[in-house]
Every structure is written in C-alpha cells, then in structure tokens.
Image (tube, rainbow, N blue to C red):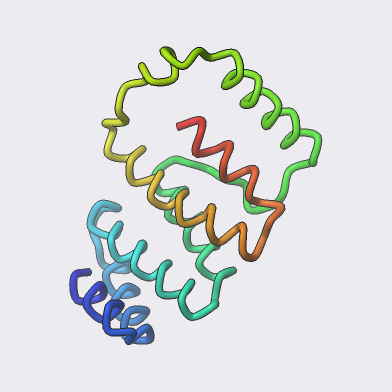
Length: 140
C-alpha cells in the first residue's frame, strides 16, 4: 500500500486503483487493507468519482463493524437522532466535554478516518447522508 500512496502523491490514480485492488483482494486482515482503502478512496475523490468513494467508504466501515445504511432511513429517524445528539451536547458542561478520554481503540480510530473522508464526500455529493455520517461519528 505504500506503493499506492506514492503513486497517489504523483497523481497516477489509475495505478493507485490497480494496486489498491490487489492489496484489498489479497490482504489477510482489514489492518493490512486499511491504508489501501484510504488511498483508493482519496484517489477516487480527486478523480471526481465521489459516489464510488462513498460506496467504498461504506464497505470499509462495515468491515470495522460500523454500519451506515446505504439506503436512507426515514427523515424522522435521522431528525430524532440528530435532536438527541444535540440535546446531549447542549446538556454537557465544558468540563464534561473536555474530560472525555482520548479514543484509543484502533478500530474506532480507523473508522473515524473513513468517517472523516465521508463527511467531505457526502457534503459534496450526497447531502442527505451527511447527518447520518456525522451522527455515526459522534456515536463512536
């Protein structure tokens, strides 16, 4: 996957896709595939293949047991979850908020990296998914 990252930095995006595909296909664990997924997703975004980047991000997240529904839930479900998240944050004092411990579980950290990319890509292409991605990232 370092080769894919090098090709990404040189803007050889077709080669990134080819190499990332090999790593993803033959990697033994998700940890082996993680950087290849991330590099491929970023390359797809640069090529303006944002919907492909979103789909692959969802697949990567599912391998981390973070499930974002590919089909949109009812707006009322999203609004209820958003309102609940907002209520909890507003009820929290500054001391409580700043007292949260640093995320240490490696699978959650990896998921946050993919969710971070998804926030950008859903903002650019599929705005209806943006609140879902934000809520999911807050729940980690």
